[in-house]
Image (cartoon, rainbow, N blue to C red):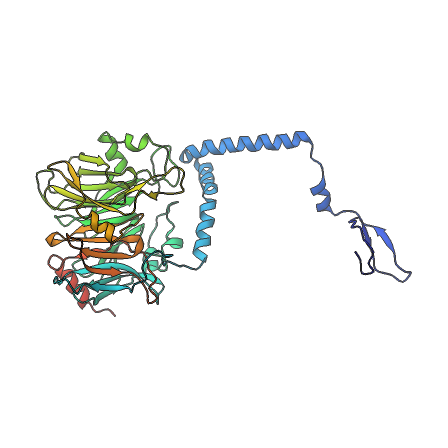
Length: 480
């Protein structure tokens, strides 16, 4: 309706022109070029040709993606197209505000160290823990003395500058975008005798001194556990930036076990796929539906010495996505023992004595109608396996229930002297020392002044005797 109250029928072909010297004039105006093109009728044969061509292109694209490495630059282009949605999501994440605090579902209790006043034990050790620093808006590593809660050393290396020396490229990890100072979450840091650390975050393995200065870096993607063997060498988990396994996609996670020296010299790199194949275990993942992460190695634990069921130099390996734990002898390439279940999607294998191991059992089930894994019951489990009797037990079952220990992923359980266990509930920012009767001797919560929780990253108990030199060096280091 116009200003005078008369109905007006829209007509894009008739437009009233302003009045000129000779009065108002009305003229016919034809549609624009874009309008004519968009409203043109396409012949049916052309529509059919476009549909058939598009369908043929999809088939050809799928054929290239089955083995992109065999198609040269065409394969590289196909991979780049396939990664566009993931890249856009990561760009969106990187430019947004970073909120690493947990969404809720926990008791809003103060962060830091709490010691049980009813317990006579005074722990002379230390805790090496990764926490989020609100003021600096980044994760840092703290060495905390457990007898009084004093922070002996705070590590915040310039990881952005360190990664600038890296030369590797991968569809799995983009260091510049995902692993700068603001998003780097040091995982399972290892204290060295000079007070420095070895650390990673699905990124190159880096050694820094007590002041955070780079000493060496091994390029590639290191993840999860770093452990020390009795001979002083180190073991770490490694993912190939690009897999050469035939028939897999560009994001396929190809795992290896790496043995190296504290000086950063790689002694051995063992493909986990090759290890399984030569020991007749390859079917455990090859017979399943395709996954980019079929194995998910998360822990490698050297045995402490000779025993009736293993020898010095052997290592236990945990493969989460197969719910499999195996005992591997690197000197011969043999798997001496393996078992899938009763643990499910487990983390952290530890040696208790010369015939028992413990497994932090996340105790999950995979639901095909769910977007991810869901808890099978109310808590995680700590399963002890006895090689002498082939039996399993859960000595801390009641404690896990009472303390409501439930992390969907991650999780640690470290045997301590006297039969205690240090338990980390990674995704809920809680680590504690638990006695055999379930009593909590001390507890550390990763939280800010508003009692908001932050995820942990595999804390480490630092022994007051064997790690005495590292503790002293870290505490007394003077940095410019």
